[in-house]
Image 1 (cartoon, rainbow, N blue to C red):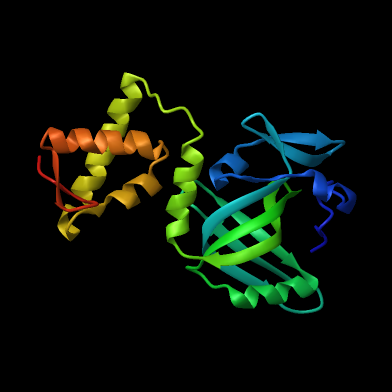
Image 2: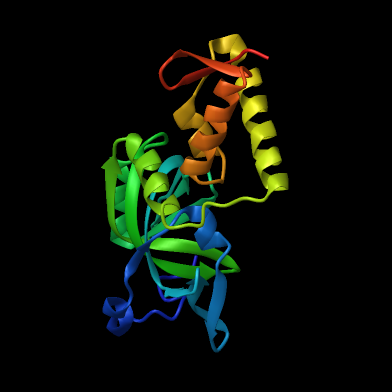
Length: 213
């Protein structure tokens, strides 16, 4: 395991130059790589050069390798994608604080090894799971909120399908729909209001949807 913390050319002298931009994981893994020689120097995401990120996600897997070469990972998922956070040597002990199912905030450096983008954490803290929705709302406010008719129709179909599938368990939370779909919360809420007005769905209680047909 010699990928080490030098796998991406973000030397210590450059760390302070990078702003820790807030992104969802899907934005990170779809970013365009900026090379320095044959190494990834940073990513281009939404027109920004990004070397450090601030993400909030759920821990879906934890791995610790004991022995002379200590190594560990947390696999994070925020419903837009997955990324691993890697720990080396003495930092592996920090993994004792985290378990599968935890929601965490990570501020870390973007690294690359064997064509895999990963994060080396500078700060990692547990957060309430509600922060996942708060972060999505925060980021979506910065994006354009206009869809063409075809995409709006696709979105409507996806919401109706989710509501139908959840009807047998008493309905689906609006927050769950917002977290699982990629469109902005504003557009999703707008379409949900239309479904309520059209009588396709109803609210047995605020924030919960059931299928009416």
